Length: 183
Image (cartoon, rainbow, N blue to C red; front, side):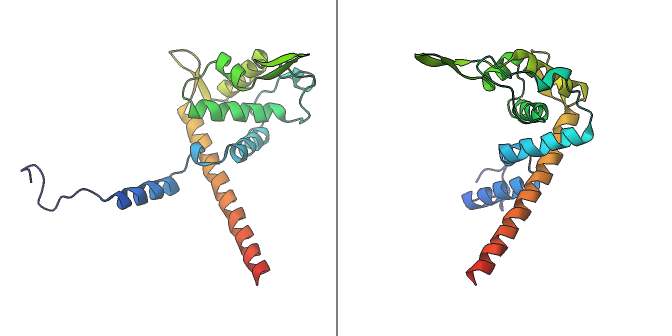
């Protein structure tokens, strides 16, 4: 035993490390701990309820990419897109508009030739990011692109915790119903 280590010092067992990591996740959940679809829907409804997000006038007539034939059916699609962009930027630190275009792009139908990936509309991505930046969720990164601001991270984490709690409540209710059905 080296002189710098006290006599009672020992390495933690692997099981205690795993227990700690599981406890830590349950103590402070964040956006990464919540399923993407549930978080995006919750954050989109929050953005719509708050009324702070500036929605362009052309959202009801625009397509989201050149590879699309029609515009979105959901009248609240801009809020959903903004929520998806906020989540993506939260997870991937600093992201530019070009990367967001690739993310929301899709296959272009080229007739009898094979499909190829086409980027989504840059204007839609840019306006959604600018709207999120105006309400303080995002900020410009000095190295380029956008990153999540401290206030934005706090808001997203708060909504993630609320979403995770509601999902757990729904799971508990379903388990109780299953137990009642078994009896």
